[in-house]
Length: 334
Image 1 (cartoon, helix red, strand yellow):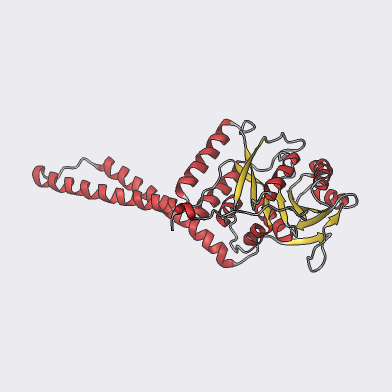
Image 2: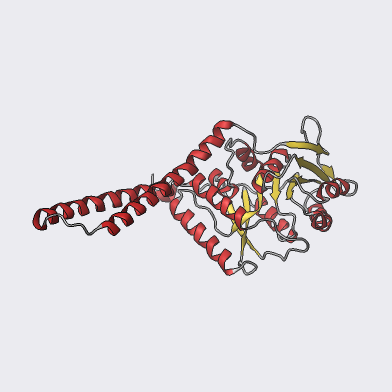
């Protein structure tokens, strides 16, 4: 059969009105929720008469929980309250598990993800795409150090991993029901969501957008949390650190063999002399340091195995508001 006779795979366009779920994780975002939910409701109303906004309170210490509950009086809001702060990855996972829609939209609660992009996402979904993700046009809102480290991390991850992960795509995206069900089926507990979105595959497309300024409050996603997330992503999606440690160990072993041969020959020719204590101390210190580094890298992978074996859930839901007991379709009609 010639290549010219092969019929290309086509993805049928979707014309029906979808049930839209919007998952909004929130941690100490009470003022921003008061601004976001009305805008989000108005935008969703132009796309479907059947929507739900799921606010996942990730153990906030301010009035986020009370604000989310109060918004139910006027807007199609459902609330999931986690028992403590489990982190954004866990909050997103909780929202995805609770969503009932034909499509699920993930977005931050700090208004930096523009609500105006949602109709564009839905239009791409209607064209047949099963995952539509926002791609940042720039990182001007970040400092030089953070921007450089972020770019370096994603370049390294792309080269090391067999899964192509878009460096400027975050959690702002639309997921078809098939994608949602695939994500829900993944049992792992160390969840690097950006990697999992790429791992499940499906027909995807990126849409460029400009990150908005944070309206109120201050981001709690500090350098320590970013570093922890980067380590999680590296360990979850590549064995490169282990291979680097093995290559370094092999190189040092070969170097020590060569040096040992040199010392043996020199001793046979010139005899034994006392100098060399400084070289010996430096070599021992260097080798011990490399051993500890290798043990540390191995420990990161073992720690992930330990967490998986314990089998603890990614999160604990303290209570839900607005859901039926059987978690059936409970979307509001607009």
